[in-house]
Image (cartoon, rainbow, N blue to C red; front, side):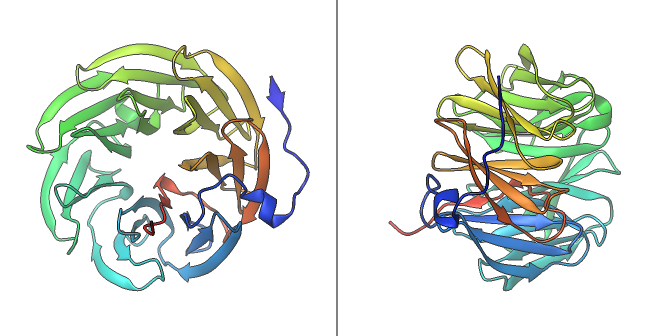
Length: 310
């Protein structure tokens, strides 16, 4: 079924099921900015200048954020107010980011050189490099594993976080870009070239299933026992049941949705061509509102910081 976007609601209703105090750090590529959104209030708190066309993002448990600016090749660590904590400039094509707070590493994919930089999470100094397939994009971390969507290699590279050793290279659909681990440990990979999602056992290195979704699937998120996939060309989000993998709904969102993350029971979707994020109630599968951002929100990665207050 298709659920049409609801008419505009009051701001307080727009974020009704988002966790109070959660912040969304939305990298806005066209606007050279980071939009910081208060999801509980449904408002943009601040707009931080961020030169170099930022796209990749990774939040830290301490409420700070890492951003990757593709054009300037700058990786930055900022606190929630936008104060710069550390910065480095890399020599390739940085795009995706993922944080491993347990081992103190930030991983950044290099689109041009088939590798992942391993950076010290505090200083951003280089620690190591990991070889991937061609044009690595999205990165995901969970349960001691690092996974890389290698777009032009049509595969996913899986590494052990403790040893940084390669465990598997798993064939998937065409041009994988975004990926994320589900709560149960399965890895879901959006294949923009084949309009489907590969479901992997990343530890064993095997494919479990392939799910058809909308046109140009990009990012994947999870809430309420359901999976949510942004469809760039469909201006929509595909929803499926995590237990059965059966399709549940297709939800209309803004134009060219990309990044996706979760706050409480709210799915948050960045709409690149509309300069908004869409808020979806994960239980009812209804759109509950939108929040305006700077120009060109990408939010490629984990972009929601949970409220650290008890």
